[in-house]
Length: 253
Image (tube, rainbow, N blue to C red; front, side, top):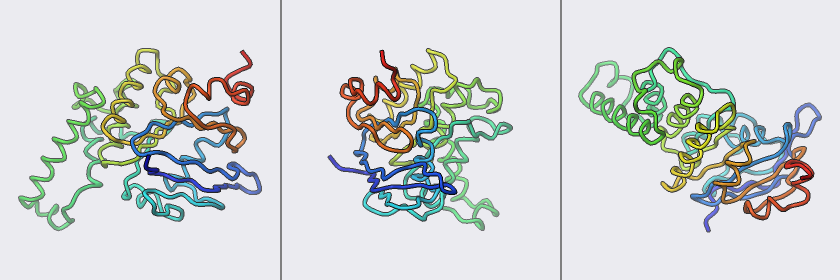
């Protein structure tokens, strides 16, 4: 199996406090890899380093064989990595469709002069962006809300919208930071089905999530962190039985 992402001997320190300790792992192309661990385990810190928001103190992050360390978030995105956030980050006054179209403009090929004069090529591209954005809303199941203001969406649909906007940049790797947080059971199941559908389309997914039901049901591999260090790694069946994981995270029962 081909490793799309490789993390080697990664460390992150904040003013003397070490958040990530000598972390190494690989993510296979087309897989769903979940990262779990108690609060403060370093999960979001890791996502922030992969996506360029934090710079590693030491170690390497390779994407498709090329180093990511030192790149800014927009440069990482241009390489083919997109992400969502724990707290939904939408443009509330824009419509649902406009939010996705904004994400799609990362792939725009027309320059500022063409856009300013509304040349025919720009109009064609804008129509293509709109069509593709509507298709992505259908993919995540919220196309019926296309013309609604994003701020008026229920939380579950807002999180799906954020995923659709991330997908608009056509990523090879999608980083999802707690997509099920705050969702009810029906919304969580909808999110799980959507993530599995993305994997079936060949998109590699890294999922940070506290909901163990969704983690165990959709993950190919699970990476377990505790105090910034890896304590276990493997398929759900082995993680479920791992004594260290049970003690540190899942509970003694």
